[in-house]
Image (cartoon, rainbow, N blue to C red; front, side):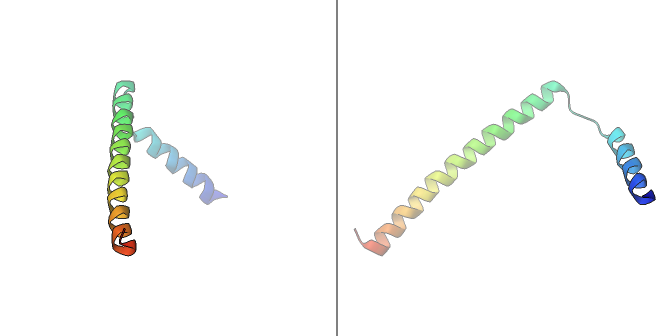
Length: 62
């Protein structure tokens, strides 16, 4: 049980050292992540479609 309480004490001490972002920074970073994920999704969709088309033409010669 002592190890567990030592762990909790050390974890709490580390959390007190954390510099949390401001509300404005958190909103900006969240927006950047959402936009980045959207762009990566579009990129993967486009190249997946191109790859599928190429494979379909090679395999089925249509």
